[in-house]
Image 1 (spheres, one colour):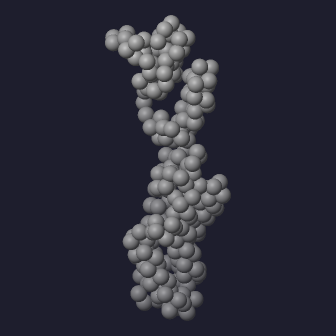
Image 2 (cartoon, helix red, strand yellow):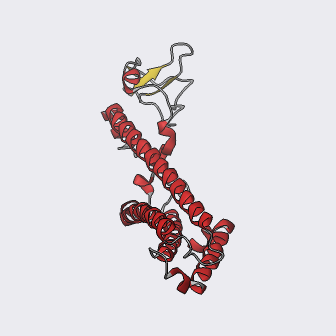
Image 3 (cartoon, rainbow, N blue to C red):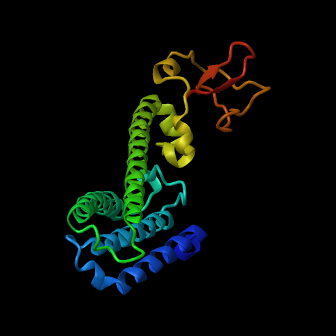
Length: 238
């Protein structure tokens, strides 16, 4: 399943890294004269990107939501996958990119002629820029996930306030995200506005509406319902 998730772009990226790595090994002795082991930095940087991609696909495979696992708290991958990506790989890649920046600056200032033929300085600059762009994009992803997580917790807390005894008796405690997913985050009435909506006890079951049009449960005398004043339709209280 993991292999089936890989794309053509991943294959191109892998072979590009493989080709560049082979060039580094061919010219390995030429790098020895550099002030810093810049070849080690480049190889580890390649390996970090590949590990990141594999970890991402592993998270997708282990998540019930597949590709849409930004809100993975409910149905997401195991906790250790999140720790691996956010607690180990990402901090390491950030630190390693900074190390590469410092090393490349020292190589250019002390031993600018040490790079073998074909390994132009612009390639290292280009790769460093790509690394920093990727770090910024991933930071944005983490920030978006944190905002969704915060809003998700707020939505669950507000929904628990709305759950009355009638709802718990009729349907039990509802898992909001298992039923509605990310759609619960869309704007609508607030908890205070919903609580202010008029409701009443059903005295008798209406002949023309024996079932609730929302939950499809049959009405019973004594049910707590809301009544639409304009048309007279009724539904169980939420």
